[in-house]
Length: 109
Image (tube, rainbow, N blue to C red; front, side, top):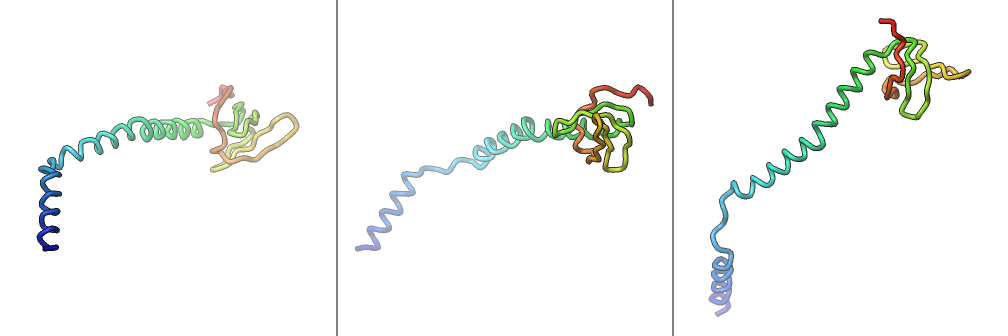
């Protein structure tokens, strides 16, 4: 008797679900979400990273720069991964990656 009842419940549950939708109807929203995520987040971030790398390549002594901490100074020397800045009476050695903007180029190539 209990097995018959369980069998009827299982049969009724299958009838309520109906036919399963095709696989592509489930994948389309997921793929659409992935494309939107890429276009809105990943692509602009890569573009900003590329622009920042180009800015660091152009860095040369005499440029007036702004760092990520807000320090404004003039570049006195550029090393492989560091830059020496002169700001008023202070001489600072910082990572190149801290430079976020060149305010005024030195003009010499």
